[in-house]
Amino acid sequence: MKSSDYLIIGGGIAGTSLGAKLASQGSVTLIEAESALGYHSTGRSAAMFAPNYGNAIIRTLNRKSFDFFRTSENLLRQRDVLVICGEKDEQDFEKLLSDGFQEISVDDACKRMPLLRSKAVLRAAIDTGCHDVDVDLLVQNHARSMRANRSNFEFNARAQKISYIDECWHVETSSGEYSAPILVNAAGAWADLIAQMAGLGRLGLTPMRRSIACVSMPMDVSGWPLLLGASETWYAKPDAGNLLISPAEEDECEPMDAWAEDLMLAEGIDRFQQFVDFEVTRVDSNWAGLRTFAPDRTPIVGFDPRAKGFFWLAGQGGYGVQTSPAMSAVAADIITNCDDTDRTLIEALNPARFC
Image (cartoon, rainbow, N blue to C red; front, side, top):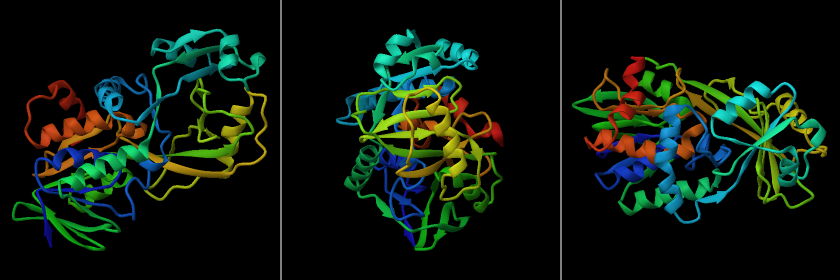
């Protein structure tokens, strides 16, 4: 059995960002069921930092995260978000304006996004405070920081049994057994299942699938904004010479290695094509990821009041990457009994609200 001070289940952005902070405080072992870090939701995200995205708690975490991103080399690249309003979207469009988007003329929108059909666009708005995030670099930076502090990574280590014995959590996996007095549940879509395995009840986490189609483009799209339908039923994002088109669906799904459904992709592409002079004739590749939400759509961060040393870091929804600097800092402060974190924020994230 391998013992450490902190044992983290999950090698996505939640587990790696917290691991990087805890590694300077004690020994860390991170166990991941797959063969690499960021295999599931983290590696399949839209990779955006959008400060006006999410509820009030998410936006607080966004603001607290920005300094980390801004001062870290090569993590951010500016990418405006352009919102398009059709005839049925005005109510949703007005809400986005109240959330911080700035209305611009349709002519201005067409200059920013050359494919737009002006006759199909009723109104438009823009957020110039958004950025692409290099998610792979972010995760690898955390991994390097952990390794520099002699942390252990255990891959292909799917949890099979969890027990609490002699003031320590013991996790039996497909590749060995590990123990620590503090167990961090950063298992993403599997977080409720990990809690059940540990003898605790579910907190009501719901994985939801989101699909993406990758379409190669015959022109340079690198400087284009992310294009978003005002009702958030589709978006299109430039990426490495391609356009990533998503139906922006939220379909409840069991924890799994998710895949995209052809019909759902076709619906998203059709919604996109209603506003542009461009026909998608071929999809080069597609994929899907799971965005896992708590019942109130606010992440769950903190010790479970029902079991000593069992720590939740879950329910990030679609905000895990962009909130990870602040969320991992809050989590580390709670675990190490630091008094610097805003108590209001701690209470808002506390898992006790569902126990």
